[in-house]
Image (cartoon, helix red, strand yellow):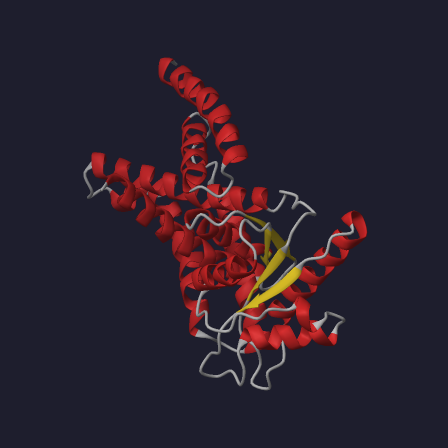
Length: 308
């Protein structure tokens, strides 16, 4: 009983700390850590395996997502990690929590450690999901000077694929909304280099799309060298700084990509509002799982570098 009271006190202390931290720095790695600790404490005072249900639902969604993607696009190697997780996680949870007799050969302290490790792993997964959803609720200010559009692959004919087209359309909608509400225009910075299987750079493809949908030449400044999200942000910021110092910036990407993009921008000292656009239902679980893995490694590196 005393242990439960201490855990409840810990939850009551950490919750306001999380709220204050999120309001000041919504994309800081520490928010995920605090959320995971809160969930871990909560799981210890609730029935065993209570976190199994939401994580299993996520696994189910990933399986459905992978099947849908295979039907739409054919099988790709990038589907393998989340397919493995979708089957390994429920099996590990079952044997560690329900059929412990199968693992009776293990020393009890080690078995307990594995159960706690699984429990905390669930907490981290749910913490990333919670933070990923929460940052989408942050409203961007209609006072921007530049709108960076993060690139992703274009077709072999140089046409925008659905993901990158959604980002570009969302950027145009935001600029139109800003002009209507505040009578303030913004410049577009479509960002993305040219892949080995792409006829033109992603930045150029988005620029052509913007120009064909009403944007003027002087309103579009394409960034054409970047190879990943971090370079998208850094190279675009360099272009913006060359035009206007201390400019107000928005960054547009897909909703599953907002959290990691915001974390990268925050770490590089780029002050920007993140804007997410919708993603087709069958693509989101698969894409967010890959983002989750990237966020885990990013946070791990951040904590290691902080303590070293």
